[in-house]
Image (cartoon, rainbow, N blue to C red; front, side, top):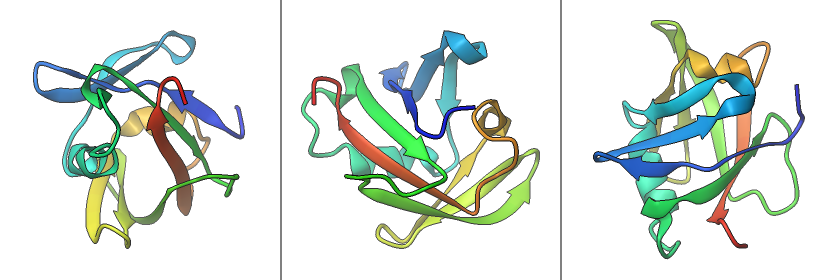
Length: 115
């Protein structure tokens, strides 16, 4: 498993989704508040709905612009909270394609694909 991961979410039929052939995911959706966090974090990224880069790690890294704190396990997924946005979002079991266990904190960077 990588320490720093990158995915490229985009909007498909009104949902934020991403593909990652390396871990066997196609149009994996973000739902239950995770989509709202993405809306807020990409509001200043031109063309984000056509795709943006999302870097994430269980460890801080230079330039991260979001910190999500683990709250609880639920229905095979995990709820995370952004204190900066005062929002909670659910990450589905696809999280375990990137981490052996749900991290206590996820550090992320939302940026344009060509950044």
